[in-house]
View 1: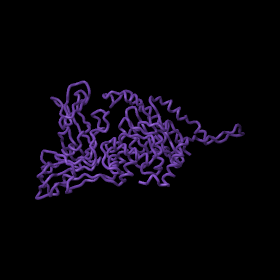
View 2: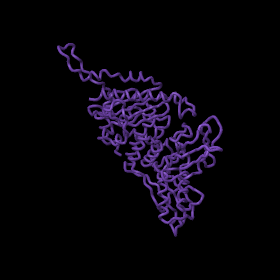
View 3: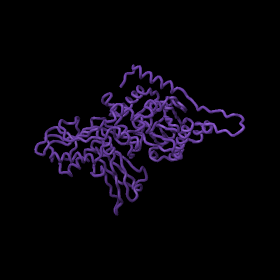
View 4: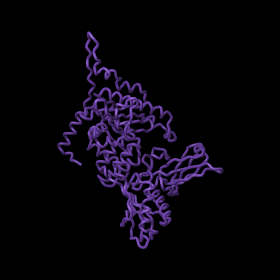
Length: 494
């Protein structure tokens, strides 16, 4: 990382800051008062006919607040803004900033590792000591990867251990949930830690039988589907709530209202003890390969001395591309925690890690109104200003890796507008940030934030998964985003 005293860096920042301070509108040609014959329409006439941005906002009829900024990437000139310096809830568009943080700290080729290690040697098929499943934080680890590790163990000739099977999660702090204000049962709000399996979600499946429901809880993937006991489900008679959760002596104890199930179905539920979840799934798979690991799953405060097998994740860039496409909150939190640990040592929790990222963003991109409480944007109190977001996009440039990692977003009816962006959606909050390639090969960086924070905060917990009026509000917000992109493509394209 370059020093803040680097004159080249200060010059670039000063230039960007100066350009960002300006606001310019389109130049409109004056038509002649008279002509003996019809003249071609001036190039600016179509631009002049576009509705003003404030008029588009008025027509949208959104409750709450709207903030946006759009800039020319080649010059850094800010072209049009609304509340550009105010912090707005970024929702999942915060993942664009987390992507910058992770890539520049860890590197695009970085890989997470998950290992099987021991405290003693392997002698005649028996490990003389403990076997440790050591997590390196991999956010993409699935049950099939654990199966491959068990197969490696079998190939090495392991049949049993003299000590205890343990899990090590100390590479990253363990956080029981990303945001405490989310409903207990939503799969996008799982635990986060140094050992993560199936995005820290357990598969709940049910089928109605003649004398009630048959339910199962498993850690399924394509090849392996081990049942687990660290999470259990009971079907109960009640009107509401649909789901309840309780920590029952080391068990994730769930109940579900019978009326909500229907005939059969399945869904993923969040896991609150990710280390135990991965450990139990691995023990079941190992047993299917004839390897006895005992009934106890212990904890280890260190990885172990002898390496037996290792699984590596895909490169970080591939992980980030999927995160930007599918908006996986677990991935954002893990890569953010890993980046914070890399630049400053261990962190206590997500808030401490986010604070470290906020300071980094202020240093790297002169972010002045960015205050994130996590790395995914799920938390209610995170704020980012349109100016801060657009300035980071401009500084990265039109040909940046960030733009490449973003997904293509279509603008209905306008195939000539090429958009690479990150979306963000929460209850009564919808955001879009990214790059717009307008006609004439002009590349614009933009950020659009809409949110009705008061309406969102007033929702009772039982309405937060499907809030009344939420779908209609979201549709109006997305239509406004489309109209703003169309306007900017016409007015600021060449």
